[in-house]
Image (cartoon, rainbow, N blue to C red; front, side, top):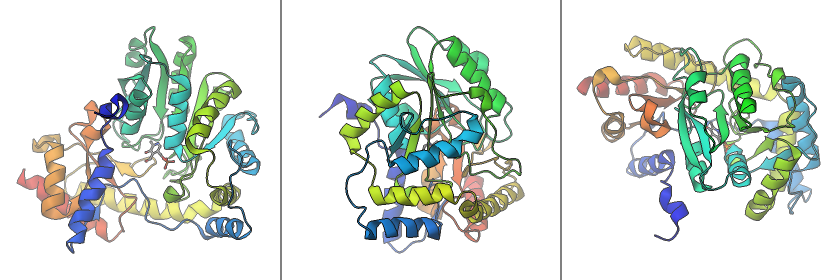
Amino acid sequence: MLSFRTAELSQQFTVELADKIRAIESQGNQVIKFNVGDINLKTPKSIREAAYRAMNEGETKYSHSRGLPALRKCIAEFYHPRYDSDIDPESQILVSVGAINSFFSTCAALLNNGDEVLCPDPAWATYRGIVAFCGGTPVAYPSPMDASDTKLDYDTLKSLINEKTKMIVLGTPGNPTGYELTPKEIDVAHEIAKDHDLWLVLDDIYANVRYTDSSPPMLQKLGSFSRKLILISGFSKCFAMTGWRLGYSIGPPEFINEALKASQHCITNVSTFSQYGAIDAMKSYPKVCQPIIGELKGRALILVAEMNRHDLPVDMPNAGLYIFPSIARFHTNPLDFANDLLNDYHTAVVPGCVYGKRGIERIRISFGNVTKKEIPAGVEMIAECLSRA
Ligand SMILES: Cc1ncc(COP(=O)(O)O)c(C=O)c1O
């Protein structure tokens, strides 16, 4: 063992799975990739051009370690109507190499050994991984399982709080569930955090990838980011910019100062010309995102219809890139099932256990990285493989 920190971590399952798929593809096979949280659509042209222009104009040096002031100003203006709160771009925003990096700096800045962090289950496995890496102990609390689930279980959440608890993580809309917490649910969780003097970290990376006609939930009751409230988010999903690696956190100045130290020692600053692309993204929202969301919604509708046609009932997700159906009635272990599906049917899904104990009877199916044409064939493979079980 070289370091106890990495020894405790496992490789990201989805990254490992991608390696297995590459091996299958290198033998000349095609794989239907329902496994990836990526989006196989081009980043909108104006964003690409803005970055390209910046690069040609010499914006290829180190830049401000908090993020370009112009970008931070755009981020503050973007969030202002949602939170009805003045966010100071000078002191309350830290631009990062993706929301994953924001979560890392957050945990590095807040956690001491033995601090407990309430993490949703099911949820993105990285919350647990980074918390543990930073010396904390992730403690799972039950979060909604899918789009048709009813509510956040506040009572259990409250019952898990003790003197070691430091932070609550909320992810909305959820990965892998597609469930969008209501403003009231977020509010109540915020009240619980305040009552117990805990930090609340809200991850809203999928907040603008929504398939309902209503506008994104207003979170005005959360008020300002002046007290133990942190938002992490990024450009990856809504603008199809996963490879650009651009995210940000918003929080109280004292917190941002600490996270900044972690960030400076880790990344110095985010790629300078990429940040010019991000400025264009914010300025051209929502227009540039509409074709992306339209395409994703079209895929989600086909996927849900095909699943139901094969007697694999699922509801349309409110938002995000995923559905999270149960395969319990087939009495198969989803991990074995995912391996069989990949090896025998060249179709990749992620077993639900990756997202926490409560996911063990489910599989995550992403529609971010498949074409509309591939979806019926892929669902057919899933149904056929399940019927063998
Ligand atoms: C819930 C959630 N949060 C954060 C991220 C990280 O996004 P980024 O690409 O900005 O690092 C992901 C990526 O899949 C995610 O699913």
